[in-house]
Length: 439
Image (cartoon, rainbow, N blue to C red; front, side, top):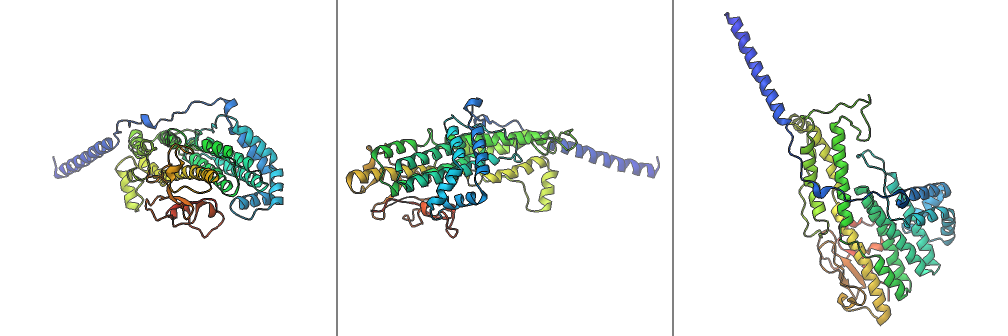
């Protein structure tokens, strides 16, 4: 054997060993993990028969809203509910144009719930959720108009319909977006109840009925937990679609012939495990206040540098790591859940304090005085789980907010911030303050 032949054999052997090492490495990096234990992340919803589903009626109501109101009326509507001066003639014209939309909306509220079209991934359009916000604005102008006409009980009843609408949206088989939109709608109704209660002389019967109507769902946090379960189901569907080669989870590749991704690029169980590990604490702690809740840090796709991105792909499951970037979209949702609980607690407390002052001629020295005649117990702060704060002299009640620091209620009242662009958003404030009726 010549020296040249030996050199060829040596080089060939090295290349063969390198190739074998590459194959072993790829094989090891392609091994998937066992499936995650995600039993607690599976949605608990039952199919809703068509004749019990309000979705179609709400869509029809929004179509009437878009067709019957002019662009100028829709703009004026948004300005009015956001704090612009009330104009009776303008409100009358808006409500006249929107009468059919409101009739369809009220008909939808008589149905048990909402079942939305299937959500197949991040690319699925959910315009209906934002349509619901427009309908809630129209309903809110109706409540405002009734109150300004002195029809206080009717105004409260209309505000309660808005609360009902928000809760239907939160409980639909949608996702986190529909939950957050529903919470915003519910908050609009609660704010209208508080404003009406401060400015009107409500009867004891109206106060009692409203208190019952704004009681939170039982168990507390149930709708939030279910929204997170639906979010997980969407993520799982998205992972499966990408594995099957459909970059658009709702469709197929441009050629119409999906090409499945290799295990090296996407490992389904390993990726699902990241999502399950991240979402499980949200579901498990849905009933907890922010002060005791604990969440793992996000595990998103490494985008710090091109090198980090290439390394992530080179070490296997690169597409799976890329998909986890969507987890960043749930930052702050637990705080939103706590804020919703605060809004409900504040509304119930304000109503109870109004009733107490009407009966006795004065506010109580302590919130304990409201128990048991008006409340079964003093509502607790959704952020730190302590009893709601109360300052009798300043006629305010307040929550410590997400910074969990009691600053003595030194912040702008929640219901006075609408329409003022220079006012910080609620997340930037400290305490969440709610003003009681003036003496």
